[in-house]
Structure formats: structure tokens, C-alpha cells
Image (cartoon, rainbow, N blue to C red; front, side):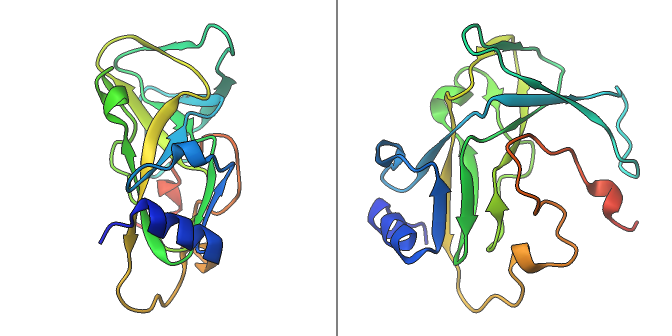
Length: 179
């Protein structure tokens, strides 16, 4: 079951959903709009290695002129909004207006976990050159109700790799897995 606007507001009042900063105009019928943060990152190496800590270069999007994304490059972005979800599963989806510009905001990581508390790193790719700006609407969070009790919340897992609060994109931590 997807939460409606009234249910999202009720969960915010209960402290089960946290959105900072919160803007009432961003609350949709059954979602909340999130915005592109001011930082992007790209990987240093052309060949990424799943067993290696692949380094990224982080840069700030110029305020007035924005930044032109290029096809064939994986950009890591970040949401302006810090969020917490203590009783629902959050899903991040691109806005249709963003998709119509040929921007994909996540390769595979659109689902959060109950207990996820952070900004969202975006895996951004484009089909053609497109100029983006910090603060532009980039996606929407949809909250799903959870059935049953949660044994271990994400923010309490000893092996959770993305718990450190940040306003910058975070590179893949796949290298921390054993395989």
C-alpha cells in the first residue's frame, strides 16, 4: 500500500518520516518531491572494479550556469533533502518531467530500507546533453507501508555501508562485501 499525502503528513507528525528541509508545496497526492543537491561526482577510472574502492571526484554545480551532463558518463548526484524512514519503505523515482529530458536518476537503487537516514545518492545518466541545476526537482519519494515487525533497521545494522550523514554523493561500497 502506498501512503497518500495525508498519511505522509501523519507519519511526519509521528516522527516516522523525516524530511529536511520540508516544504509543504513539494507534497504530492502520494509522494514528496526531492531536489538535486549542489554536488555531483564522477569516477576517476574508466574501468570500475567491483572488488576495489573506486575513487570519485566531487564538484559543485555552478549556481547560475548549471552543469551540462554528457551521455556515456555515470554521474553521482545527491538530493538536497535528508530523509529518515522509521516505519515505511521509501522508493525514489524520477519525475516524469526529468525523464522527458532523457535523465535517468537511478540505475538500480531506487528502494530504501526501513531505518534509512541520509540524503539519497543518485546514479544519473543521460541520453543526450542536458543542463541541470542545483535545486531543480529531480525525483519523488513514495512510501510503502510495511507488514510485520522489522528485526534490524538499516541505521542499526553493523554492516550498513551508507549510514554516514553527508550532503555529497557517495561512491559504491561494493568492495566492502565478501565475494
